[in-house]
Image (cartoon, rainbow, N blue to C red; front, side, top):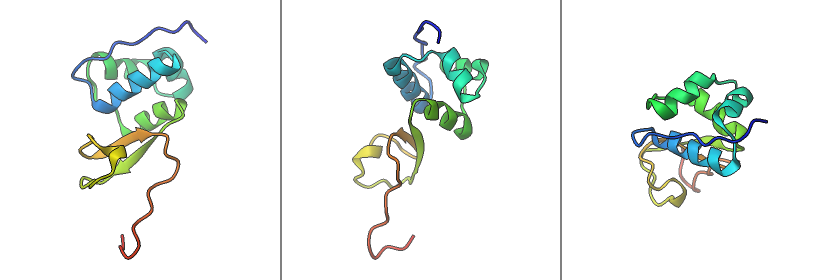
Length: 108
């Protein structure tokens, strides 16, 4: 493994990319190691952080998978789910292994 080098993340980066950068720093995994382990090119990962590129769900899922996390789809109407608080729609990253079960009596 290479010597750890923290990657700089633009303020305008997508929130999930900011979360990815924070988790990479916490686990001390650099962008080149992430690229090799995830199968996403280094240039693509660099573009997310330095130029504010928009990552695909597949690429983000591969990157978070290397860090032991997964993307979890969420509804726009989140209600009182504290796990997804602050995320307006789409996906959140987390270590939750199983999706939330529907409430009894609610079909869906």
